[in-house]
Length: 288
Length: 288
DNA sequence: GACGCGGCTTCCGCTCAACGGAAGGATGTC
DNA sequence: GACATCCTTCCGTTGAGCGGAAGCCGCGTC
Image 1 (cartoon, chains in turn cyan, purple, green, yellow):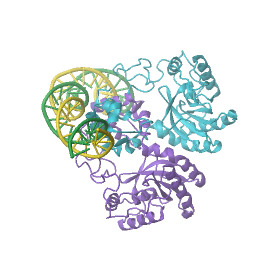
Image 2 (cartoon, protein in one colour):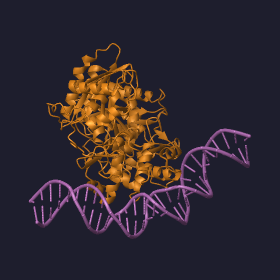
Image 3 (cartoon, chains in turn red, cyan, purple, blue):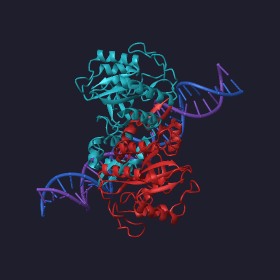
Image 4 (spheres, chains in turn cyan, red, brown, green):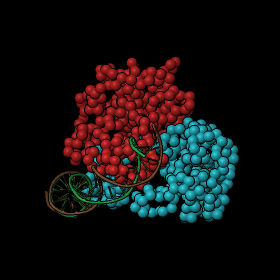
């Protein structure tokens, strides 16, 4: 992928990150692993088009690229529908309200409302955190395809705090509970001070496409008090997405009974393999 | 630009639009003006990387691209800072609250909060409207570089409603007023039912980098009542961006006396300096 | 004020990645 | 079964992209 021009272009874009949103040409060339001249040419074209912008010798992601990104149905599209309900939920709770979707083995935050009063949390719109460590992550994982669940259970489970779930067996138990309860309550798994109440959002086909959560201070909070509001908001968004009122029956339990290829077909097959039957299920960040 | 691979890649991305956020391969190839095979190859690479996603034979903008777009300082970056204040303003007014930045001769909407009660307006996050026709647009234009102002005054001024300002002389007068008052009140210029109150947002250097507006029903509203709140919110955001408390003295009046290169140095001669005389100051949508 | 340095830009001849026509599925429709 | 549409693979040709070299600019140093 580093070979084709397309790959190089994407490499240039990938050189930018939340920590380094502005880069000089030389930095870009280093980060993308491209000869300076090559980077120069590509960056020039990107800037001419508006995908990058230049200010004081530094390049940054351009508005035009942001506009295109805004067309992502799972990004702003979803956000657009969900916003009024998030707004309501925020108003009732006065706490951080978050909306996240699944990508690879991460939860990607699509929206966050946080008033001045709410706990400060590390998440950021456009940011990602692993599934096992967050409320929204657990909800997404609990309703994800079995093979993805297994992959996460097998993979390393990074510890953020003493409370992070890092034991596969425990995680498995919690996921079952989340499925049963229709809500995930997690305490201090990323940051000790924060507690989150999360619920699933379904699309017209009844599939879980996002998760909604409220993050509150863990100190002196009765989490259960938030459950109805979170659930209601999640249901409201689901309805707005065209979800049937009665969510489909408790779905695919963990492990085993995967109706082989129920959707997308080709599951395993990991690393590239030259793109024969299309790509394997994208897992985590692509090679870049 | 249609020649280089980079250009083709961008062409593929540009094929997507708010009206057509999902496209088949063939549609992409047609819209981008590429042979099917070429489109196939490029789209394949983009999808493998996550810039596009495939669902049921259709391609859509992928989450990964959305993530990268989220790094645009003028997009989500700005939004992130402004959000709490927009929130406040929304709470006080219960009306549409919008934040827009300048791009070419358009205002690009970076954020919009609209509760269920507010007037329905055509704007959309990530969408654009010409400067002369909107409240935020007038604010942005009033504080824009003189050459851009001239360009807009010279260019065709599209009429949306009978109230849209389409006469250069009148526009010039209004701009002066906006500069003087520090706020723009526009009634029914895009849609007859809506009235907007807009104010400028400044960055650390005191430059106007965005505009904030509240859109209310024109029927039975006293616009002036909203002015203080809008102004206060705009000032608050400016302050959060590091703007000096006392905004710089009334700036560059229209026309003429452009202190050639007062900031940035290279005003004319557009982009860098390489890329020969390049295009003149990017105007509206780039060639694509 | 000459020198060195780091970052940026231009030039240009070589080469291999990209191109795209053709042909072959897969699916759906009448 | 014939037709239409859309997608995918193959492969020989060629010019777009490559990247080393060299020059430019602004800056800090001696």
